[in-house]
Length: 315
Image 1 (tube, rainbow, N blue to C red):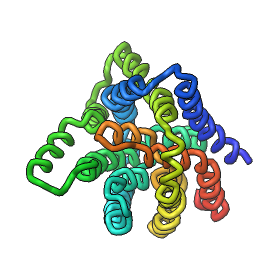
Image 2: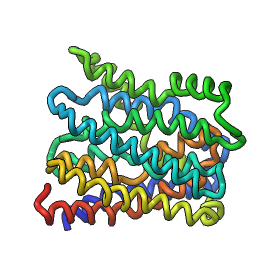
Image 3: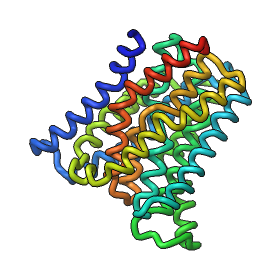
Image 4: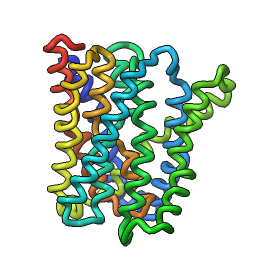
């Protein structure tokens, strides 16, 4: 019951923030141009600062486990490549491929992951290692996939390749990750005044992103994409954990490591997917639908997986 209550406390407020954004749009307090500006601000400022803050404040050296980091990295890479391949084969609309792939593999590791693990173990546990192994890959893969699958994109031309590489090198989210990891390895900390300023900006990322997502949600368009939404949600919440948690158990991972893997594999699709899709010239309707659906259903799915692991004495 405690785990169920925690899951509801972790996911329902997020869902309600989206409802607030949707309500504000319906009563015309916010409009289309404001939503576009808000999403751009989150993409270029608050999300990069949040990732920098989370990674720079993590002590990777104290909990380093090479086999665990490699497992997280290669499982994530395998999922990305397989989903991209399958989406290219079976999706009727090629313009949905980028959104489908990103929404299927990219969970809310940084936003929900640390809080979830802290609630169980009292510390962030193995979350910093999982974030280091997956979040940079999440974002680099998203930039590549969304660049090459943007509406109107006809192929892998040299010009488009160079444009995509430039986009990757200058992507605000990737830069936030790079500087965050670099800062975490330094033998000194930033002055407290700067840390508090960064923390204040980082704290804006999640609520503003959720309000922007809810305000930009278009119900009629989402209903037209109900089938890919359901498939994405099943991949994110059910199929990935069912495939790779047993393998992790066979490799000897237990306790906080397994919980971090559960977050990596089965956490709801992160709201930053929507912001990135919008800012890389995708419509974002499928992404917003999957974020809303997985956030709503994750209270059930995450509780189920956690209960299963506890029942077998693995955590």
